[in-house]
Image (cartoon, rainbow, N blue to C red; front, side, top):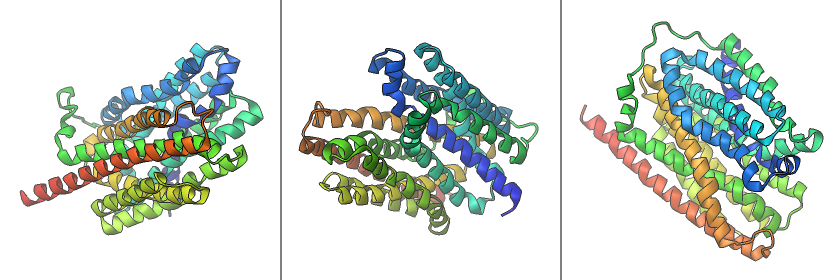
Length: 404
């Protein structure tokens, strides 16, 4: 592969990885933040929520702005804002300062996430779109999943400030690579007017793709919210072994993302979307029944493999036929759907787990296991719902072809 092509892929991959890493790396530091600032759990929880809500609020606008002003230009601005905000987080003298800096970090991450997918069509030949979407899906999943483990190491070595300071040099590195290797924005770029801002949502195939992204992201987020409780309380694993078990998901994502992209290019996005959802359904069903560590890990492998297949196929399907002037906007909508899914998974399915296993810190192992089973039974229902959207999209695309 040519050096410039490698540089483009590295810059896009690192941008996606950092934005996703910011979603979960702060979670492991919440107890330390509560102690450092003498604050309640509900107060320090805003360190996580501020980042997610900032991304959710502006990501579609960031995509549209990139279409108007230039996607490379907005990616650079987002990376620089992200790096500066990381430094401000690390220097925060108060919890209020930290939350405000996390809002800025989320604004930068919104531009990074929207522009990364939007730039694929500008930098990669059409025949390689699937594998690059698979790579970026891998980076997103790995970034979200590795946050607790990386954060735990940083926290133990240098304290909570390191959780945020690590993003500053990495953000600057990604900005340097983007400036060096990504193609310059085209002059005279035009974009749809504000009145037509939501026009793409009139496409039923796009709506189906976004709905599936939300549902599937909610399911995968549940593994990060419920998994640690089941491993530590339900299976009574020590912290070190729990960390190794939690690393299985990221490792599977890293191994299967690019092959999933290749399969999407060879067999088609619709077939691979259904295959991915099928694997996820089997994994969720298994997680609703497991009673041993080996079975849990095997089910997690199936679920994560299915997620990688789905991500590569669905992202390719959504972005492949998009007009060049709208790539940023559609990318923003796609990332918005994913972020809404993460929030829904953490809150709604987390609430299901809390309802099924009340007082989880004192509950018996079997009670926690029952909570896992109920939660993933609900997750299975979400996957089935996503499958109905996949069939609707298939029908909508066939109908559109028949009218041509």
